[in-house]
Length: 135
Image (cartoon, rainbow, N blue to C red; front, side, top):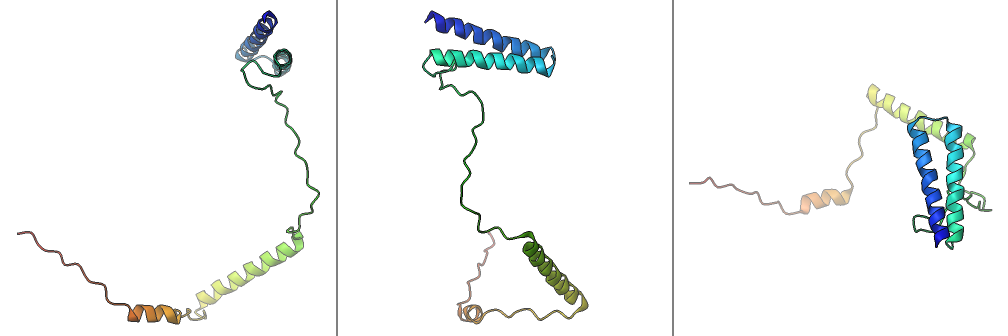
């Protein structure tokens, strides 16, 4: 266990040196070198402690792991030419409808569906609340 205490002390001294370098606004290369020393000390501690780091959690060296690419081709990707043509057609139709509305040549609004009209006509009238004046 004395070995772990010595390694922990080494990690703490490296961490303190990084803090002092950062507070003194040292060169980034110096800070990077101190961080690499700290990581190597943490790794040595974890190897001595069966993979458990200084913080009591499993050791992670901080390196990002690559994601595996799938071999499936993406079927939903449409070439840019088709997308741009669809987008241009949609934009032209919207502009034409806007211009027709400005000119007064817009088609009349669509009537309500028949079932909505029947629902409005056949529904019983809603009772109105009458407020009483306090005496």
